[in-house]
Image (cartoon, rainbow over all chains, first blue to last red; front, side, top):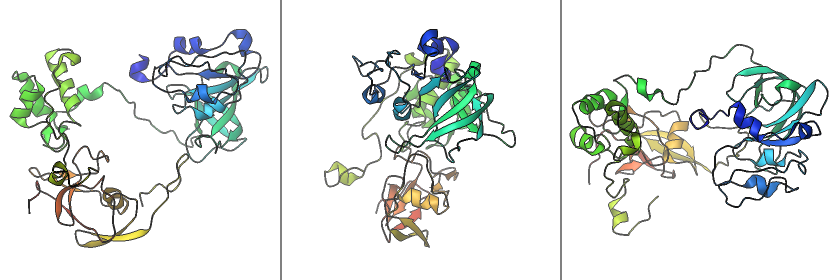
Amino acid sequence: MYLKTGVADKELVSNALPTEERRGSGPYAIIECFQEIPCNPCTEICPFGSILPMDDINDLPRMDYDSCTGCGLCAAICPGLAIFIVDESYSDTVASVSIPYEFVPLPQKGDIVEMMDRAGEYVTDGKVLRVVPNKKYQNTPVVTVEVPKDKVNEVRFLQPKQKTEIAMPKADPDDTENLPDTTIICRCENITVGEVRKMIDQGYDDFDELKRLIRTGMGPCQGRTCRHLIMQEISRRTGKKFDEIELGAFRPPTKPIQLEQLIGGKEDV
Amino acid sequence: MLRIEEHPILTFEKGKLVTFTFDGKELQGYEGDTIASALHAAGVKVMGHHHVSGRPRGFYCAIGNCGSCLMIVNGEPNVRVCVVPLEAGMVVETQNNRGDLL
């Protein structure tokens, strides 16, 4: 589910949390990084070695919570904005959470802001305690907000108080299924999903066959925009698995170039 | 104006203001723009029309992949204006066909 929606569930998050004892004894960094990608600024920036060195750059970061002071450098440097600083020892009723915030205008100290969960749903209001601009570390400002203690590991984003309710369209990553027949699927050749569906239903269930019949993927983009969309459509209509569908032939040059470049007279842009 | 003037992370340094023509009309853009970004900032949303259906083509991938912004630049057809830097005095024209060889 996480890979599909990008929203970490309770189990993933609770695995990233330190022990109850550590949570009560001062600020700590919580790293909500759940997908292996080649990225390590957090291990490099940590002045206390609390984010343990990686054996492989693709590894997920691991924490030594005993040495973490909650200084917040990792929250500012993380390119994925996946690190937060939580202080549950702040008071008996409220806790603070520091969140990287890359929007303008920046909130000001004392502002009441709306706090959202990982899926972007409103949870509670919070009071801005401080805003650190971080000009030194790639400019990502970190905003620290005071929230009710029981909500501190639920809220992960903030927005200014909305004067009116903004209806956000719900994005469904799988919704290409419900495209109307009139949607253009191949922009270069102006081919609609309907035309592609008709061909697939007649048995032309191969990218190259469709290419020869209705020219999908034969325009200047050479399938870079439509290839996967068409393969998804083939998969859906034939019931074949997506990875069993052939990509189709790629023939050089795979993008528009000038004849002059072919004879070596000019560099490509 | 469609330029980003204030950005939380990045700063944009503009080059010199230069003049070019688009379908005979004089427009201005900055050095460092691509032709497409200068046109877009000047309010030009239609980069051309499909050679068969005549549907308008917009600024789409912006990285030279999709071929949606092919235009005639200084007489040369099929130029991907989203990856070609703007120069002073360029003559840019919309292209509504596959492009003619000289």
